[in-house]
Amino acid sequence: MNDENGYRKALRRNRLGLLLAAALTAVPAALVLWAGLAPRALLASVLLLALLQVAVHLYCFLNLGRKSRDQTILLTITALIITLMVGGTLVVFFDQMQRM
Image (cartoon, rainbow, N blue to C red; front, side, top):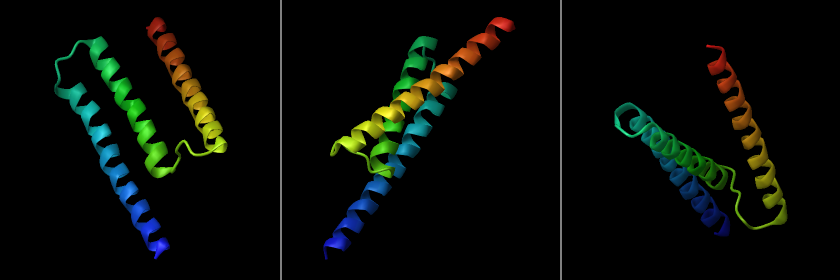
């Protein structure tokens, strides 16, 4: 009986993650397409929603929480990798913008 409860809990978490991930994808797209926000406010809102989406993926799909030391180290490494990827992308974008 305990395995069935664990299965249902995992299924519920995955469904919640799917709904949240879809919403956190659709909302920034709608903001960019239809909202008349200032560019800085639009960028800030899209970045905030992107961070929320990363948190949803880590919690709902990878089942990472705040339970153990190993998971904390894994979250720290994930944050470092994401920071490096975003930073590298911004460097490339700004370099291309200066060349145009």
